[in-house]
Image (tube, rainbow over all chains, first blue to last red; front, top):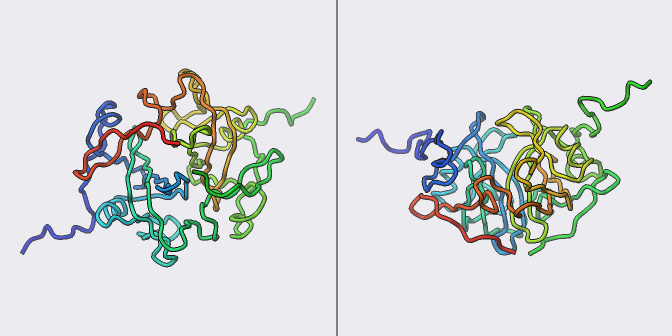
Length: 145
Length: 145
């Protein structure tokens, strides 16, 4: 019998480095989770480049995303792992994962299932309003390439 | 004499609404700052659609951005207001501000000054590495349209 199977808290990622060059330009993936255990993820439609949504991942969500190829987030409002599309069908399939210089933010380039959208309001992108000159919000034009 | 001039802490934004539809599909800008007083901002090159960087704003930074038309963030590492480009020349001029459904994240569509980049490493975008199949990070191709 092994005690190595399925640890509840995966520790599969290298820790952040205090050395700027190693963290910021190195070849080792060292995701920097914040004090709240989360990093930020931007989901982008791989076909169009459109930003669909912004959400957060803890270590478990990031590991699940890499292992399954389908995007998992950590729902801050529900306090639990959240497979995107589990109820809506708007599953996000990973095409590429980009990391920023200090490795506390990711871009997820995804293919989108279901109706192709990402927002629970029915909008394709969660960013469907723009700040107008008068300080109010107005609808923006849909998808740009 | 007036005591209304230049309040240190601007209170110019409407508070978040507990009513989902008002917050998520309404026309009133109700930025939702987190428990840490911050919301997340994604800077995008307005000319190419490329994601340049991700950073944070407190209420003061957001107000300064709107008032000056040049992007200000809150530097978490330095604990202070940070006008982007104040030392690098990589000033970001606001072309549009988009807000997401729950109003805790913004897209800033910007024109970029200086050398046209955004990252202190010298890369144009902070997202210059991608996660490879072997778990390491590899350079990504530059700007896409």
